[in-house]
Length: 437
Image (cartoon, rainbow, N blue to C red; front, top):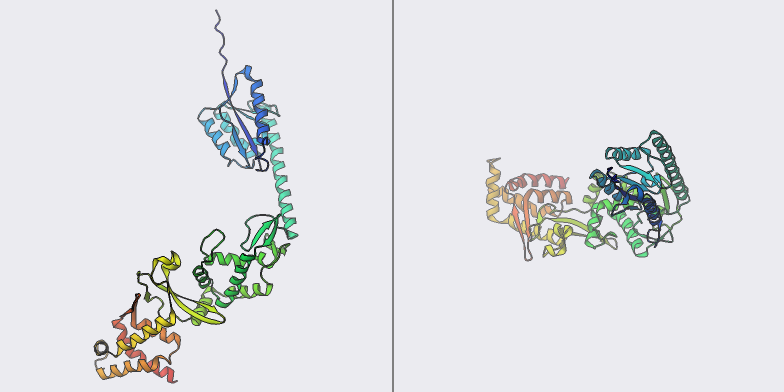
């Protein structure tokens, strides 16, 4: 008696794809239509043992030009695990529009004994004729994708030449309405002030510090740094232009800054950062740079601002700039106030008998003929000579004498460089001759 032949069950996976997310929120979209047609085809093949797997594989909003799609990757993983026998798609280009990519997929299908079926295009991938038909269809699918890409690129280029906004990251100072760039009044005011302030400072580093002190932040809430500023200064959209592949065209949107202001800012930026930094330091001398420390032990860095044409200099605790104002009881201090206090205290220290004796002893190690009276007279010269020195000379002498200044809420403690005292004795006569000349 013949045994009845047991029909093999073929587990069918339905894969659907749509290139854009447009319409996916509709009650019945393109993915639903593809899925319905595929399940109907599987049902028609039920006498052959075809059954659908539990889950479908849907990629909504993913291009067919590559394989970087979550549902497709999950499908390939299930194929390699032996969970799928037949892959069913509505149309061949739903699986891939790239001939090379599809060839890789077919190799994986063959390796695991999986059959590929297109509901609207009848062929069998296990025969040579079926493979030829498949490659022809794929060639046309890839050609169609490339033609569509060329059309999109041409459309974008033509639109940019007309100055139209074509999407992307919305620049700070603007908002998008009806696919057009419109000025955001509050942000545009900040953009103008940043360009104008840069003209006065000539330094993106100092400008970033100043903006951080004023708690002006980017649209995402991050503190403004000089990298963000340089991107702002390089964006020609602020002078009313649209840029495509390095070429600027007159834009439909309104400019935030004038061409004259743009040209002045870029004239400054054309200088090397080192030369600009030197100019900035010359305009704002910081006698205690690298020497002043806040009560929390953090260094205090020099900065400045201008108001109504007047320069105001400060020292700010670095932790306040980098972390928060709560990290130090002294957030900032006026530069003139602390520099004057340190200089006055230094004058008193240098007149004390102990310091005179220590300085004379140190100086005699280099020249045994030096007397205490000569050292006393040299240090007395410091008092009368100080106010006549240029800022650069004042800063150099402070750096020579002072090792560290620790600031507290009540006073400033100065730590003197022992080796600098004898150097000062040699320096002061030389400085005196310079000033007399």
